[in-house]
Image 1 (cartoon, one colour):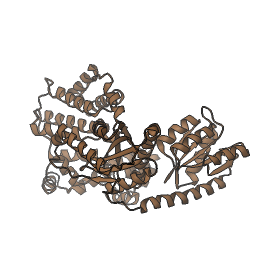
Image 2 (tube, helix red, strand yellow):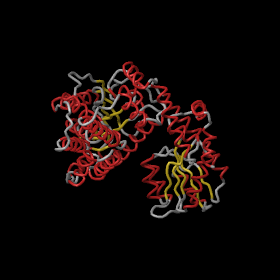
Image 3 (cartoon, one colour):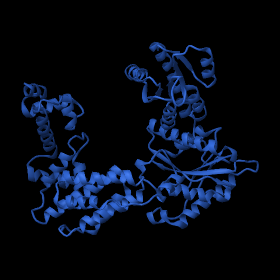
Image 4 (spheres, rainbow, N blue to C red):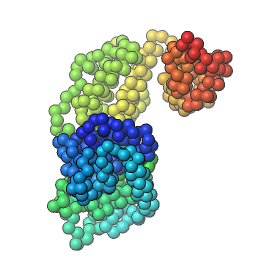
Length: 529
């Protein structure tokens, strides 16, 4: 599906075109709308739409000025002018700026759809051409270097300054080997990438995207240490910076659209000459270590990380932490979750995504809760280490909050076990089922993993305690929850099926009727009456 940006200062036209396309043009999605040229330019650079539909007469930046900017930053984007002016001079200027179609208001919707169909054919051909290009050899003179890294891939080795310096020097050596005497690209930036995309597909996309724009050298240093070196002339620094940002963002979007995986780029600072290349690499590495992967933008700059780190560092407010401790020790699960929400909302607003600071504060808050005098639950070293590792591996603020809450609930259960009999296996399984009841893929293997026992052993224990198999119990629990929802008379059968973990409403209805001798639709009608 291709993206469209609609820019028009008249809300009725802007929203009307968006609604029409959403209903009648399934091959496109309206990614955004803008009411003026400045807003349109900002959104275009963020979203990189394949098609832009814009008016000419707009406030803050008129359509022609907007198109002038787009021609330089997004030269491949297809443009449609939608204007109230049937003026030859306007049309001539628009065509000079690369506009594909000039449509006059009132809009001829059939003509618009025909133009978009033509664009789709062109876009499909362009995408196919991109995908058909085979990856060049990863080692080419002036194009790529392939480096083998010695030493351990462990956490300590990865973070050692000595190893970083050696890897940076290897990049420097590779660039020296591929440097040509006539090369006048004196300015360089190193970008590192992190993600789960195929290396060759990514490098092909990079070289295709930047061909004729800036010189690109792809260097493989080791797993998760892949570097891209950009080279350009000194007088082109400002323009190259913009093109690198837009190009890398386009590559990230391409990988996502083609379902090839998620990737982020981390840019070091600009340096002049080979002897400063290692510095840019170190800066790119610092940028890569700054934030939580899932919350990072497509392209993150070393300069942004430095600016954030130079900001005043404030700790979570004392009242916020006190409330969290009280809820962890005396509150229920809802009040505890609300307190954790407040803490993580504060992180999001105040800490600029600084992963190291957020992680250290989460661990500190956990230690504070464990050290509270009424919290008599004992924690083993293995349990503490498992939690620490989950905090360090979390790739987004949301994932970090989930791990934090999971640990606090776990400690709450341990504390409760000090004064009352431990939950039975069946009770634990029931709690886990309730938490995952809407997941159609949920299975006994998932429960076993959460309880740290083998599936076969769990199957035996559960049958002994309940007299039912896990599947029978799961089905009954889902049907019981479904009946409660249907008894309200307010939820559609299809929605009930989805909420209790069934993809197919028909199969859900069959299971429900088998258990209660009444169909879900009949029960719903009965509840309504």
